[in-house]
Length: 239
Image (cartoon, rainbow, N blue to C red; front, side, top):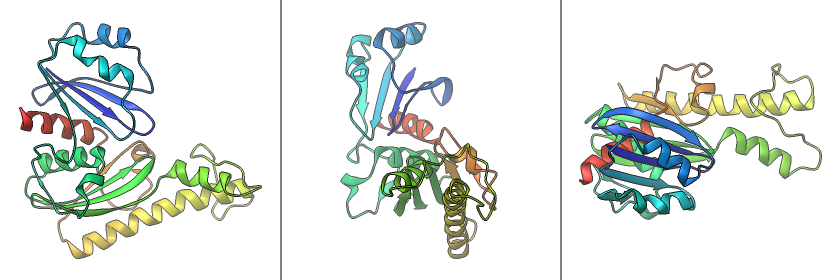
């Protein structure tokens, strides 16, 4: 069995794979090691991979107590199933690396645009087996928090707020501005890439992807697990 840890900016995803088949997955902000051991106890874990875009939680350090024969910490120096054409590969987040690997596995040799709508929104372009580069912009929650933090009187909005367009009060105006701004941004990225790269595959993932998938106007492949699938692919690739 393969044990997968995807430590993001706001939460950690944990998964177990038997080869390429996902057996278990969960999402948490914090687990005690005792709780994790109870979850994993029915399984024989032979390999593990850890991807982190922030500090490594203490329970990850305790992995050694499980007597896992092979534990891999993902970095740009890992053996990857694609080439990186990026001037600063050392700054490339491991979550982006994993998503690219997952996309390369699912769409081998093709052109792909991965839109990862999380704390930040990343746009990563792959052609063949080469990562060509990408863009990063603030995510939905980050935009709401920025308007609230860097002004004196604007309230904190969220995706739970209902709104008219255009907004009829300040909270509606903020909600409509942030949500529609993100939707317009994503739609225009897709339109531009589809215009330049006919037949491109579009992948939407990330914490806000479920909220956005029915709101953008283009047909996309909604793949919430592409990062953990990519991590499993990289783990198999390195063993």
